[in-house]
Image 1 (tube, rainbow, N blue to C red):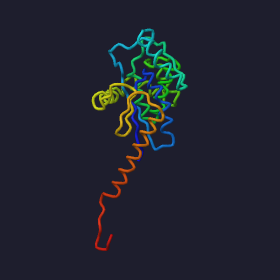
Image 2 (cartoon, one colour):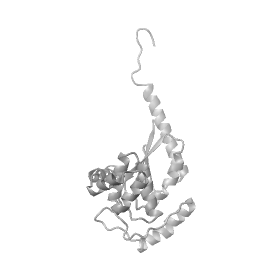
Image 3 (cartoon, helix red, strand yellow):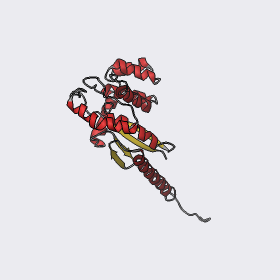
Image 4 (tube, rainbow, N blue to C red):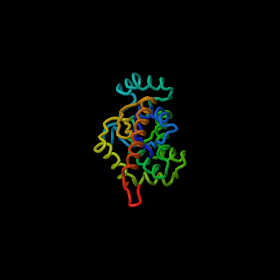
Amino acid sequence: MTLTVKVYSDYVCPFCFLAEKPLEEAIKDKDVKIEWMPYELRPYPNETLKPEGDYLQTTWKQGVYPMAEQMGIDIVLPKVSPQPYTHLAFEGYQYAKEHGKGNEYNDRMLRAFFQEEQDIGDIGVLTKLAGEIGLDQDEYRKALETRKYKETHQQALKHAYEEANITAVPTFVIGDEVLAGVRSKDTLEETINQQLEKHQNTNLQNLFSEGMSCGIDGC
C-alpha cells in the first residue's frame, strides 16, 4: 500500500522550497506518493511582505541563506515588491493537479519565484510557466480568469486551517506523524520507514484476521 506524504506549503515560503530536496532524497526507491497541500501565509486582503523590509532581510540573512548554502541549493530573495498573493497560483495548481502535473507545477512555481524572481501573482507569468511544463496555456489562463478553481482552493485552505490545524509551513504529514519545518533527509527517511512498516504490519493483521473460518471439511 502506497504511503502518502502530505506537504503543506506556500509558494512565497523559502523554507518550503528548501524542503523539496531532502524530501525527494528520502522517498527515493520507496512506495511513497507526495501530495502538496495549499496553505496561504498571507491571504488577500492581508498585506504581503516587502523584500526591502527589515523582517525579510533579517530572516534571509540569518536563516534562509545559511541553510541554503549548507544544502547546496541556489536561492535568492526575490525583488518582487510587495510579494505576490498566491491564490491564483494555487488555483492553477488545482488545474495542474487535475491534469496529472501537480507536483511538477508546484516545483516550477517555487523555482520561478526563488531562483528566477518571477512575479507568480501575475496571470501572464503563471500562464507562461504552466505552458513550460506542458499544460494547455489557453485553457489554463481561462481557468484563472474565470476563477474556475476558486471554490476548490478555498476548500483546500479550510482543510489546512481548520481541519489539519496547520500553523506554519512547511509541515509534513507522514502517516500519523506530523513534522513542522525543514527536516533533514535522514529524519524524513526514518519517519517514512517507520510509517511504511506500520502500514505493512496493519495490512498483514487485516489479512489474517478478517473473514477467517473453518468449514466441515477442515481448515
